[in-house]
Image (cartoon, rainbow, N blue to C red; front, side, top):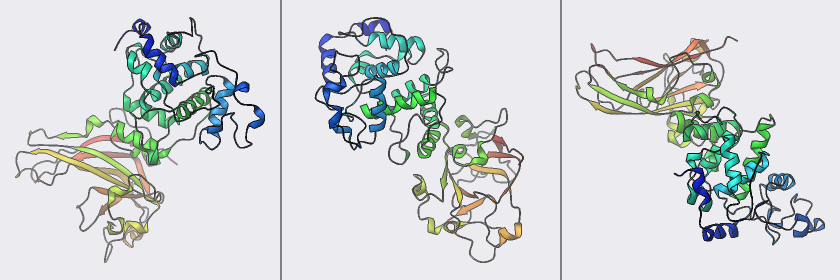
Length: 414
């Protein structure tokens, strides 16, 4: 990590190599777009003057970027949308697109310095986050791109005293629609960023700053929430999105349970929600063969109902592990930390007994308790005034199970 002023001292040879890779607006004196390719040769379905953008997914975003003059093409008439972008180049585009004031020479070996200085002064970029070699000569990662995107759209995050974790960056970026996932919500935070992706992100930055609400990739939000909170419960199930009680906010640090007697310790690894109505839900495979899974109805006669017959529902899968059990007479060695959700009730218990899913209940494969899993219908259930989430140890009587409420969520009255 180096200070801002140190980035002035980059070797000319390194910079010349970089400049041969990318040509951006203002980087070098260039021909105008009209001289690159005549407008008359532009295809009707290609809003850009670049032949290699005709069938590209980002052609609309690139067309807007060209019009706004914060990016340009190459002198051979191409845009090269899949070429990678360095950190310095991305900063230049963001600073230019958001019209930050820039002072100093923007050509020559140190062309990037005024743009970096403007980004640091505005709070888009932290001075201590600049590594000269990586910043100037390596493709910018999706995580680094997301950091700049969230700071460029949030004045609070532009304040130097405000910090946000890498996981928090990706969750914020996906929740705002600034960043979308790759295949099935994959975040790939260390993946490289292309010219097409860069322009698309910058167009989203401008849209957010204009007060627009962006389309959100629900799979990406789910993945980012899992990475940040070790659950996607709050983004996936609307009733869990309510205000959390003071002192009872969800936190990964609360997922460790160690009993006061020092004889048991374990933790919840993840709480994963699967939308049963979505065959493409990226976490569906965690359930194994869905056709074998049953849900529990307390007084149902015969075989318990199958969850596959109730697709309009959410399955909540809990993953946990035990660190140690020092007294097997006090605690069972079942390899689990107890996880429970309270606050749901059935509006019609008789219907529940007859196989109508109308409240939160447990899921099992062969016998009740063989999975840490629950199912909740998307509608038709009742709630109390709040929903509570608790942890407990597998204690053997008369030992107490050390139940602890980790989260409480207020449910608004309808």
